[in-house]
Image (cartoon, rainbow, N blue to C red):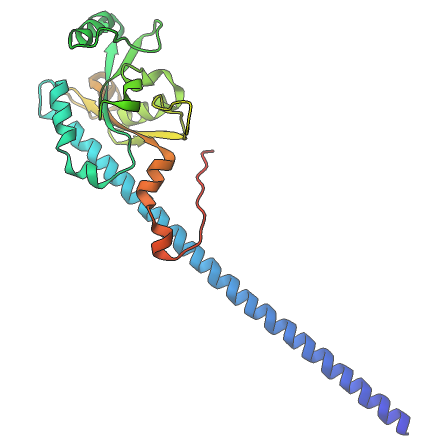
Length: 258
């Protein structure tokens, strides 16, 4: 009888211990789940904030490009000095760092290529030509890019339309009438050191007075593109700055194309 009573007490003790352990494990899992959910909410919030900052900056860049388009709309022909003055006096440009410059790429029909090269050379650039060389139905050329110094000199005369990723964004901008951002490229401004991924934003410039209601009309009236080139690391530093230290977040950001 005594032995049976002890066995029963031992069994109850083991059951009590097991139930206690199960409750402890369950409580721990609930706490962990709560922590994970809170972390997930915090992560989603941080991602939303970063996304909004990037969107806001890209919209600011697009607004600057539209300012360049407006300059062409207000002029019969924008000369090099006018472009320099426009960029130099663009206060908004100073408040949205990250882009490498503001440029204009001109559309050049094949039968106007020789005259175009002669014109630019007469402006004081005797070595100017459209690159890459070769025959094609349509040429484009970066004729303005401010600030016109350092890395940006490497882009002078480059035909961006010959490169598929750039061409896709240029065509999208032309056909829609809206600013378009390219995919990942290597900018011609890059040197052999500290190479960064690049991207570009384009806004189309049409002939003054032309009807541009359809895609065909926009293509026929296209004069070129006002554009911004961006080195990606510099661009993101300009957008986020010391955001992590100010917000107290610990999220590492990496951007992938494709």
